[in-house]
Image (cartoon, rainbow, N blue to C red; front, side, top):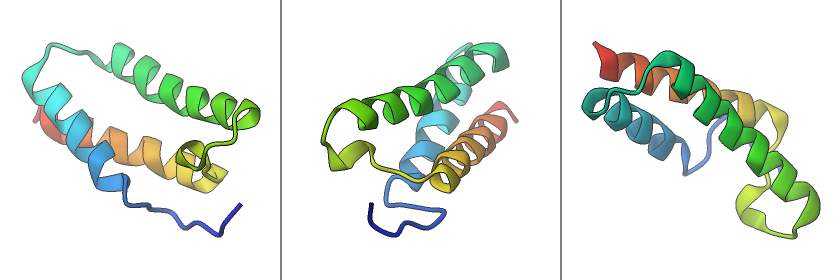
Length: 78
């Protein structure tokens, strides 16, 4: 796996996606966490079985993705 930091080019996409979802839907925190963490788990499982660079991340980046998701969702709710 290539060296990867906290953020990738998809980090702003995570923030914008969850900001918009929070601002313009009635999605609640429970479903946000199910979808957000569920997606990261899906990416991890997919990367174990398929050779695709799209889903290759390290653990720190996965955690950073979830933190960015939380920030976007929280700010969208304000």
